Image (cartoon, rainbow, N blue to C red; front, side, top):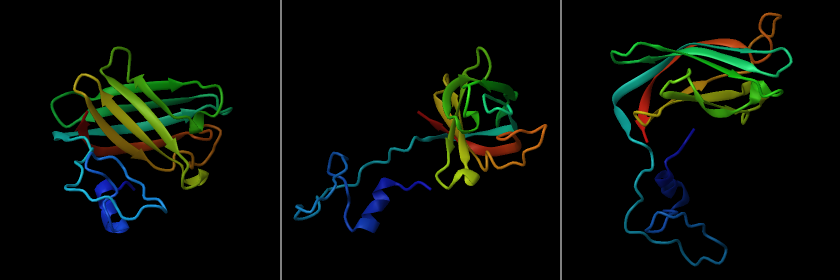
Amino acid sequence: MSTCASEYATCLGYLPFDNSGSLVTPTACSSSAVSTTSAPSSTQAPQASGNERTIKQLIRYCSEDGSGCDYNFAISYNDERPDERCTVIRMPGSGATTESWYGIPCTTGSVNTISWGVSEQFGVENAFAVLTVTNNEEKTNAYFGVANVNSNPVTPSSPAGSGNFGDIGPEPVYGF
């Protein structure tokens, strides 16, 4: 869960930023909190008006020896554009099920690049990933949460890390 930095003021009892927006960490020597005249502006990117994306039919197939994973899915737009099929093949050599990567083209020549960040912060059995679609022409990002990325049953046809994660979204698109 993320929290807007300005919400910390309620929890801390003071605004932890100076007038320039820099974080001020109180120390044992601080006599008082820094006073400010206004809260810092939000750093969250603006949502692109009404634009949404959906990931359709996300399938990840990982090799038995953990040397690589293939990612197959479609990016679906909420406008007149057709779905774009994506295939990302990652072969790190080992640890593919927990590998994070970024900026891989959806397909050769695509304006969309794909990033995949894995987190095990809630334990290995609860690992999740954030799949990001970056449209480099429109300067937009869409973020998709993928739960339990390494928790699917292991079978001869579905090695560890493999799974059919179905459709994810729709999710809003943010400008950068």
